[in-house]
Amino acid sequence: MKLRVNAFWLCAVAIVAGGLVLTEVLHNDYYFNALYVILQGTLMAVAWNILGGFTGYVNFGSAGFFAVGAYTSIFLDKYFGHTLPLPVLIAAAAAVCALIGLGVGYLSLRLKGVYFSIATLAMAIVFATLISNWRYMGGARGAYILTPETFLWFHSYIQMLFMVMLLLTLGAVAISRNLNFSRLGRGLAAIRDDEVAAECAGVPTLRLKLISTTLMGALMGVAGAPYPFFVTFVDPASAFSLFVAVNAIAMPMIGGTAHWIGPVIGALLLGSAQQVITVTVSSEINVLLVGVMLVGFVTLAPQGIVGLAQKYFRRRPR
Amino acid sequence: MSAPVLTVGNLTKRFGGFVALQNVDVHVNAGERLGLIGPNGSGKTTLINCISGALFNDEGSIVFEGRDITRMPAHQRARLGVARSFQIPKPFRSMSVLENLRVPLEYAAWSRAEHRHITDEAMAVLEQMGLKERADENSAGLTQVDMRKLELARALAAKPRLLVSDEAMAGLSSSEVDEILEILLALNRRGVAVIMIEHIMRAVMRFSERVVVLDAGQKIAEGTPAEIVRNPQVERAYLGE
View (tube, chains in turn cyan, orange):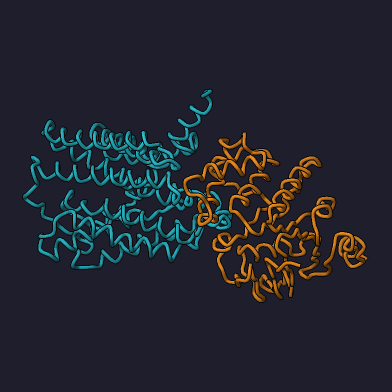
């Protein structure tokens, strides 16, 4: 076990170092744009998987949390006259979305299965309506954000944003991985498998589900917080886009939901494919790609890539 | 006679207009083996759902080891030492057999478990249940009898003071019934009170020190197995007039 912990952290350090090297080697900002989008997708997928994969509650409202994270940044940036540093905005977005996660959990966790999913979708629509009618936030017309002029030692702002997102994503993966192997994670898995049996085994199901929704919300807020600085223009239609929510579901489904690495694999695979197709074919095809891959995996490999791999290794004698 | 570990007083449970249980009084003494029988639909499972906390009763009280647990959620009752198995096995399907036992050890029995030796404790329970060879198998792929054993093993891993076994033997062969019976008796010898719900009369009569009979939501008889067998009311409940 000790060895595996070290291996994980070694990988994380290597990835951060690799990211830093990239910022020195690559000078075309497009690559960092593409990588940022892929990482943002990964972070969203990892966050979705904590509730959807580990706990078994399918959330269709991911875009709501993401957008609230983004709009928290916009609000604070505007209110404090562009003085707050990015980490503060990210922390604030995490806190706001954690609270929303807790609230949504408290209101809707009595609902099971598809009813819960619909409630989360409704939540996202409520927030979209709210933001669309809030003049200060730009309303339905959207809000512009000025990209700061300073970007530490990097060569461009997007490079810095890419490194920030890389660190955030690695942090989320580390949290998700720890959760997967922990006592808490086993409690969540018990809830997913059979809630009544879990309760009778002493698992405080309501409390654990609230922890799960809160953590999920916080991480999605974190994913959304730097988004305004990435696109410089945010409107409700793009921030609350169903595509954000669908990606957050599709990526873990393709990678495999029961294991922490599943959403990471799914997000890297699907996210990269989307980027490549957007550039080489068309940006419309990449929407189709998500649909086709999702249908393919749900019918042929419902446990995702991780499930396929586990099956393969189990069949071979150890 | 020892003090009761569980006292159910005047318990009533309704589902809408239907009265599933009416003014039922049941007690279990410490270390006792109590059989709970009755025809289908007589309220046995509803009663143990109320005892374990899966359902809340409308009237009456439930006292466990001197504490009123009537309004306590199920997971807290499990922590106090009330464990149950399910009539239809409910394994945690994504987990191995061993991991299935980790859940009650890490939650229900957490305050009483050796935190560093959870796996050893789980293995000890599996060994006792004869499931040791299955430890690493996926729980969803077990045979019926092993699934029943896993149900009981998971209840045991919660380190209960009172075990409620809900038809752990239904559908099993005669030798498998004996196997489960032996496990329950061994458990009882270590001081755990057991409520056994069963349709297999041979098993209930051999196992129980005392039997309570429910019919249509009411307790119609209570006594030693020998008394119950001769009770005309019980005969009528099962066979009709």
